[in-house]
Amino acid sequence: MDLTAAQPLRTRLLLLCRGPVDWTLADEGDPPLHADAAADVALAAAGLPHFDAIVASPQRACLDTATAIAAARPSALYERDGLDELRTAAMLRGAAERDEWLDRLYESYTTSADGESLAEGVARFEAALRAVGDRFYGRTTLVVSHPVVLSAFRASLLQVAASREQVDALPELALSVVDYLEGRFYLVEDFPMRLVP
Image (cartoon, rainbow, N blue to C red):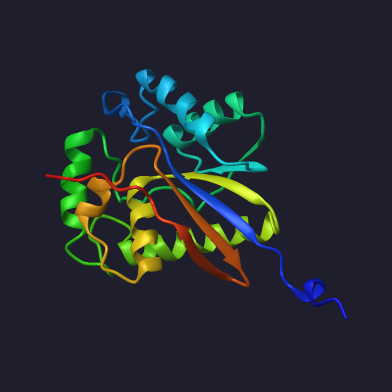
């Protein structure tokens, strides 16, 4: 009797934090990837493990990052709602507004007067990630998303409290590896975290 036939296939998700954004161009609340980030994205693309497809948040910095990676490592690129950054009630028009929002966001995990709470963002992100895992069952998929939602998802996986310090410690273009099996996520390789003074 062949027992391997009954084993589910491993679905691997490579979670990549998008490259640095240019907050000076955030007039519409959706800043692009910084113009000077091309070399960093190309270097990150060269160092990524094998993947079969790229799925990205529809926000500009993620799409810019994913498009640059797809140019360096030809792959099908898909946009996926739900992988975007925590949703704010008002557009953030610069780095100072983003920092003020982040300071308020971590006052409560379950509520936010500024839009989505961390708990709501993680639930939305997990649902979108499950859809990606189901669509690309048995394959490896690169998922490009944003630092706040990625660090909150990481905290949920590790069963630790989400904190502003985790966002600050998450480098741009940092990679984490997660396996998706039977509706659950398993952290295989954590994000590298930089020391924050």
